[in-house]
Image (cartoon, rainbow, N blue to C red; front, side, top):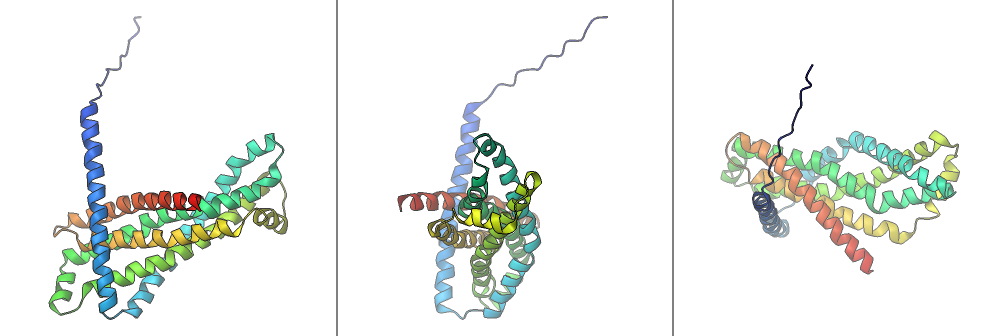
Length: 272
């Protein structure tokens, strides 16, 4: 019986079209970044000259913080578990298992905790802001506020941006704590280490300089996520499809800007 021979046809790679696509994506990203900066100028001008809606700010803080705790808790525990389980075998080979708690604690506090938590928040909080404000734009609620002499920037945008700038750093601190607890759970899968001994080993390697830069850049993460989400939703189109586009583009742009801000923060910290 003759055997069938299956051949995979070669697909030619068109590098010119690939480069064109990359250029278009980069151009779109830089245009969005410039528009977000201009949007920030409008927010600052209104924040200085107009009345601040404190009740709306507290409401947004509750929504951002309370509705994200469960997701951040799961993310933090998994982050600590995975980082511990993956880092343990190389340390066992060199007989340096005692360094594992300190190494994981420094990794979570300085980089893993802030960045992963900010990316998760960009997906949940940024998309939520973009979809909510986008639907308000589509249903002409924002237009109605402008007609009734109510400043939508002051009532809708500023409280959300400030709430994100305040609550996301707190969520990052919470994720760091949960991640360290997850690391303790990961160590106890193979070994038996008490909580007191684990915390002593972990924080004996952590210094004050490890915590401050990570905490400062978390405020910029929150501001970027809030700004991008509000900008995309506030400037959404008139069709119903624009709500989904605003939510999706909020996640993409905010995630990229979080990585860019983290790169800049790492370079500044390294110079110090």
